[in-house]
Amino acid sequence: MFALIEAHKAGLFKKNQIFNNIISGIIVGLVALPLAMAFAIASGAKPESGIYTAIIAGFTVSVFGGSRVQIAGPTGAFIVILSGITAKYGFAGLQVATIMAGIILVIMGVTKLGGLVGFIPYPVTLGFTAGIGVVIFFGQWKDFFGLQVSMAGLHHFHQKLWCLFQALPDMNIYTAFLGLAGLLLVLFTPIDIAKYLPSPLVSMLVVTLIQFVFKFPGVATIGSAFGGIPAGFPELSMPDFASVNILDLIGPALTVALLGALESLLSAVVADGMTGSKHGSNQELIGQGFANIVAPFLGGFAATGAIARTATNIKNGGSSPLAGIMHSVTLVLIVLFMAPLASYIPLCALSAILFVVAYNMSEIKHFIELSKNAPKNDVIILLITFLLTVFADLVIAVNVGVILAALLFMKRMSEAVKIECADNDPACNMIEEALLDEATNAIDAMGPMDEKVPQRGLHGIKRIKGLMVYSIDGPFFFGAVKRFERTMKALRTDIKVLIIRLEHMPFIDATGLLTFDKMLDLFRKKGIRVLICEANERVSLRLNQAHVLEHLGFENFFDSLDSAIKAADEEIAMRAAAEGGS
Image 1 (cartoon, rainbow, N blue to C red):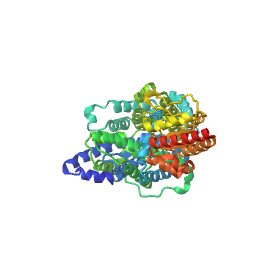
Image 2: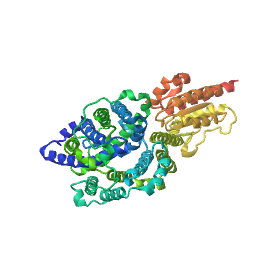
Image 3: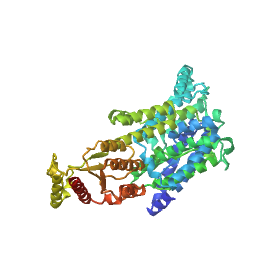
Image 4: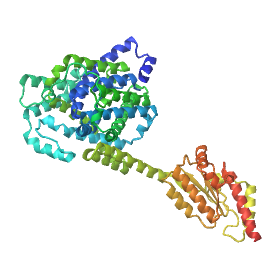
């Protein structure tokens, strides 16, 4: 109840605020009515199931969610995945998958995973939403044009598209006329009218009135296709768990949960930008989870935060959860008193609305702009995700897109990690003059060499024969270990002491720890003493827990470069003395 509490603290339940939220809730309820029915039919459910979903989700998310102004319900983004579940497992399977997705969302919220959803890259989200838009657009041709065609046995997009093209010459001219009229009304409803009645509702009412008056033959309506919408609210009933295999639905449920979390949090972020408020991401997931758990028990299915309805709520003065609650009350009143009239609504009117939804979802301008201006790897991810969504499956598309993005990110991270000789590091100037004198004497004692006296290199750094300082800059994870191994194996054979600086290493993973341990054995066999210095507390703890420090020897682990250089000087001097004595 985060949003309710925050709204109360902000004084949003005062008399001057209540009226604005009631009006906004009524308007959003009218917007939601045609969309809820259209999304339900496109998802393979009955139109009343969409209305029930909007009522339950709108109320539950407003009460238990993390955003003051979020409006939840069935959305276009769900159509592809939900229609696939319904086609394969029936409506009972869709309801069970919805409950499972709700449980997953609650777990995500309770375990504070709300922030992780934001790590899905934009090319992935744009790719699959654009793909969903394309699938929705062509999926509505059948009802928009009144095509008498069966899609049974056709599982692939290209098969369905070819079937639709073949059936186009036999379209119902009256249905196509009504569909086109509905589409034009959605797009071009006068602003003066749209202030009071949303354009989708205007389109649906006008097209329904035309069909009611002229009774064009062959035009499919909600009454002819579904038997109308029952008046009243459904009784509480248990979804049919016995008719489905729970294990088969784990994958679809995870996809519904992930997609629902992504869309609801994206909608909440958009709302924050419009209102200047701050939502609670984990509480929002809990609220969305409750909505998806409850909806199937009252005839509904999967729901999430709806960006368009949330924005409509804000633009019409909605500022508290009261608007979302009023949106649900408005839909309840419509079901109770106006449900019989829904029988006359032509399906082509709802298809016209979905055409506009599909266009908005596809974000064509952003898609083209990203394709032209984004880095090559991001464009590849965008196109692969888009094509897989259209021609394969949304689950596959999202998984492949995220995995590709993660792999490319790790590649970039590995390239950003620097493992380089630090002889030219200004920090090496911490060597005191006395230490330099001792080092000079030690080197002289070693006999004729290329560099008998330490010489200043770039930046005035003194170098000591037999000592090499390397610095690892960046996270030391599995993607960077190969470069480290190659660098270490290529060290000169005359190195006596190797200092590895970890000052700029933020973290190290298990592969990095194992690699460190392996390299220590290699250097030990070569007679090279390894000193590690300047590791932060987190890296030091990991090195200790993995017993790397134990294998290294705690005496070879230093807090500062200065201390490590002194130890290295003593080691080189000792070896020089031993070689001189022999």
